[in-house]
Image (cartoon, rainbow, N blue to C red):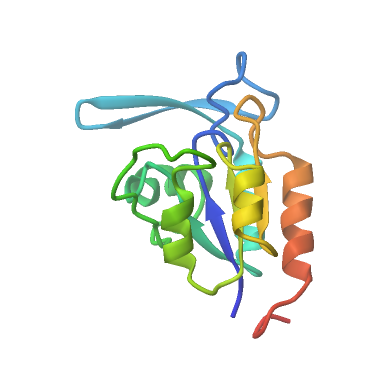
Amino acid sequence: MRPLLLLDFDGPLNPHAADGVPPGYRRHEITEGARTWRVLLNPSHGVELNALAASFDLVWATSWEHGANRLLSPLLGLPTDLPTIMWPERSPVRRGSWRAAYVAEWVGERSFAWVDDEVGDAERERFPGQLILPVDARTGLTAEHFAALKSFADKGFPGHP
């Protein structure tokens, strides 16, 4: 079975803390109903993620929840039916990402890589053997992150060449 690639949006794909528009990114406005969001997107990220889909099952792990498929996937050129982790409660926990408990329940025994701007040592300790990739919300995903994801996938998993 292929590993999962858990994708947060704000931070990794939308460097919301950037000072201006980072190189390679473009500003986008997303409007749904009366709500408008301004995001920064790098078109090469969609290309990279689609290439990784040959080795990973892509999963949205973002507070955009199902809105990620509807509003974000088309802008990135990703499939609009990716599985989505739902966050029933968003209250912070004492250490680590508040999402970790939901991730643990959702992934079960599957191998996974997780890219998020709110993960770090606590998640690495909680999920040994998994790839936990903290992403700086000022820069978003970089070539080094994509190289680490490719390397993780290349290690091989049951049912994955």
